[in-house]
Length: 419
View (cartoon, rainbow, N blue to C red):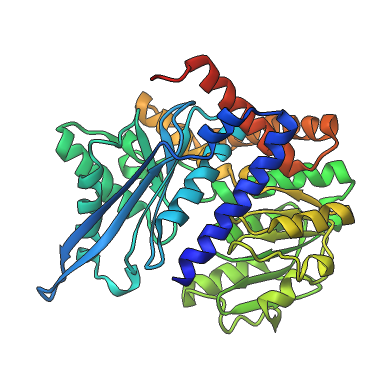
């Protein structure tokens, strides 16, 4: 029950940001109605048999929010707290994330109410294959292209792809992205979201006159996004002062050795016991001394309660929805620049798009080419977001939503409403 309330409020934050941009675009009431309602919400039961012989039933979800610009695109998460509200909110965000970086996709998201930590590998495979089988008629390279998300992996995508291929009687690697390289995955996909965070941050730092060599960075979250962002910031000469995960935060004013931190996580699966910094709380980390703050873990961590204490000059949202509207206003009033989630963490879906393209061509790029194309896509579009920000004297967040909404509205208008 608690999770449902939390996710509804996150969706409410998304709608608030949408409305602010829609007002500046002078979007009419009819178009607002269309864009604030999902195209399709799918709910179904997933009965499966435990290795012990016992039966259980989980719930599966897939929300296809919008198809105006192309097939739905978005991840699948396995978590006991997954709800329809959560999946709808995330599909809503995926619509704008794909549009702001000009990908030919709409927004989608899916999930299963299970806890993978309690499942054997065989149980996880059976759940994945049943989930995929239930969606065979509504997913596909030209319909809806899932990807990994919370608690799902390249292996889960491999099972999904194989199940879909068996049902359609053809090899179809383009039905999902985030697959292993051996069966159609893309080089550079694992690091893509963290790389995108760094690309966006460094570009904005240049605008602000912050040299990487003299910049200090704090990153909340040391999972896939935060870890690779930290590595790339360090490689560019930044001093990464703080990192964190569920075990707590670790701060070192002189800089954390990110390679050592990554090795520690590789050995122990978390940062517990890491000796490269002073142990502090995640709450303290968010308000610690730094030039650049990257919230890359949970939603709603920057709030009305702590926004006035944040010391960073630049916030780069690696997570989805880490900043509440109240905090966003405080940051704007204080002159703190925020690169919003739909722009800052779009690197993952951009390289997922590259994977989809490569699968359809049957020709795969070198990692350097993937990274070069990623940087080109992100910089081209963040520069357009910045132009809109200046033109309308607004924030980067509102400008990003304006660009994304305008692109979707133009596609909808050209296609028309089929009735």
